[in-house]
Length: 514
Ligand code: XMP
Image (tube, rainbow, N blue to C red):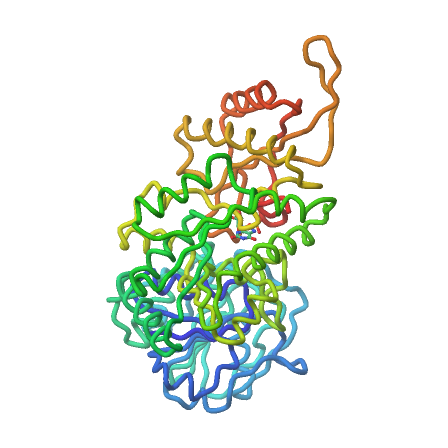
């Protein structure tokens, strides 16, 4: 196992995922994990991630002294490298110009034999994102590779297995990123590439059983399921681990796609053989959302009401399970270090945070990215059709109706959404696109239908491609498809007279509009 100490870079988890991708188990823990815990995990190697801090500043995150003496190989990436240099007596200083983006990494003459640069071309593209850099290396360190503006881009200790990368090997734009990580993990740490997704299943099932066994008698695992990829994969995993002690609950909050509620219940009961409980709360949610237009307020209400309703089924000793994935966590955590809150996630409302404090939350997928969850689902025997469903946000159509959510506006969006979905499927694009959906805007536009002036709603179409939901770009949908969707929506959905296409990427936009 390779352990990643997270100093708050939004890329930290990509390191774990890249390493798992070539068959070595890797896990991420906070930077301040104690030395004892680290020892207990017995990692073959440790990666210190990047992070937003400056090593010189007061309160900058550090590692426990002693980490460097464990004898375990350590790779510092960006902030992690600066920390190594700083701790061992070198100098790190702000650069006159921060460096963001591509740079060309050249291996130094005479350094080619070092296993960390094995099989690397003489020059290769790397991705930089830093303000500070090492300006003087500690004693016994040498530079193995540089870029035009960063002389110490890849450095290591002459005798000990301590290595630093100023660039980010984990991001897609670093051409030889996998090779470099593999050189560290396999070449330097000596890890074997024999980890498989089925190992993850066994491990997760074991963990769940252990927690359940340690709990008071009669404790169950209760979880809200939505019918989406994440909660379905989680449910199958929990069912496998806990059998009838797992209770899936489906809350129909009225913010789901047309026809979705019945389909979900049927699939759980008949397809997956689980005893699912359905709660019909559609009217309740619309009532609670009356008059609310502020996006974060909506998310809070949807989250809170959901919890209020769902918690009625949670008994004193029960566990709550959630299908939270890594990107959901990273975008909602707001501690010093890790990325700032962008949108409040429904899996992190205060009631759930409280249960987390009580150690009663089970999130078996929280280490994983979407593509890994799909792979896990396949291994669990879930159908491809279900696994390649597009993601759907927890707060549902509530964050796709800008402005007030009312029963009437929900009807409009559901009809428009169904048309988008039907047409995207008919064009054979559904599984090729990360997400495609309709958004109901809070503006009205003038139009003409027949000979009459209309003053009606506007629908925005959104279709994006993404690998992990963290970044995304709009899809170049064929014009004729866009035209068909537009005219069908305007003709078939009463109250809409205009359709526009969203051509923004993430960042700076986000995938959902709220
Ligand atoms: P954004 O809009 O933040 O979305 O770019 C990234 C991905 O996450 C989904 N999303 C959510 N999923 N609960 C979820 O389960 C949420 O509160 C939530 N908000 C956004 C979104 O659909 C996209 O796939």
